[in-house]
Length: 347
Image (tube, rainbow, N blue to C red; front, side, top):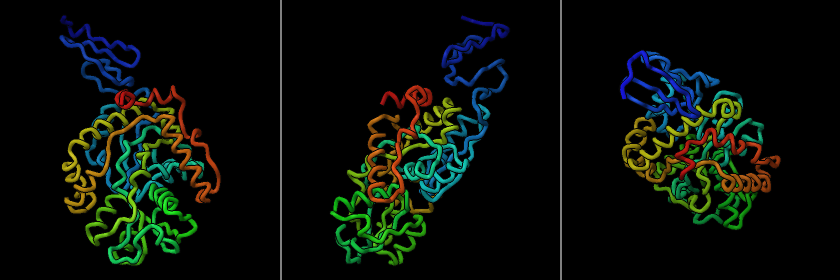
């Protein structure tokens, strides 16, 4: 079927825009797109913002490096601004003061952020890893041979991070309490230097810091996160941003997961991409990228129940000052349906 240029039309049908062009029928999957003429620009008229503030951690973020969000959102009139943080807790603090709209963190930072009163929501979770990329480590020449030897020792970690949870669970496994050690909170970059110089007894950390310590000082792992870090981490969003821009969140998650599919099939290429960013040798990053996961999963009740158990454990151990209800950081099923890409729902 052929149409003259005068017959150019845009027909909106539910979640799709049917655009009839001369000799061609195409479907645009963005609800916010309305092509009025063949030369007009696509506009994000249904979005409540023209800028997305994305937070990322210093351990590396291929979403930023590959520029996939910019490629998808710039034609829609949406700018992407990125801000780097040493770890998840700092990213969550920035979300609390309105500097970050979305970002990826481990399972623990959102709990501490909720305790602090941050208005946030869980929008997607990362595919769980094997846990080999996180661990409790000591120097090769350390007299500490097992977890029980940590009693009375100075153990360094980033407070409020996934390492905090790993430490508590590992101590529990060894018959120790959190109060049995000397906990010291320190950002990863500072802790790495102190560990390499032999100034601390033990360090709880994650890749690439873990892989780097293994390579540079032949660090020994007392316990990795296998069987403990089962949540996989989360993509978090400021509540107002998520509820006012569900289609925008959907697009962002869709692009992240599409890139994740490529990354899991091309880990060596990911390592090459991260090398100049992290200034870490390629062989080390090849280990790191093989231990990471990149795909996303939808939020469901089971994973949130597990998140509640983690929060309850922190309260029992007096790590956080009050009990929280994880449900208060969740959306309704209808709201999740609106912002969760279909590709996530089908997995």
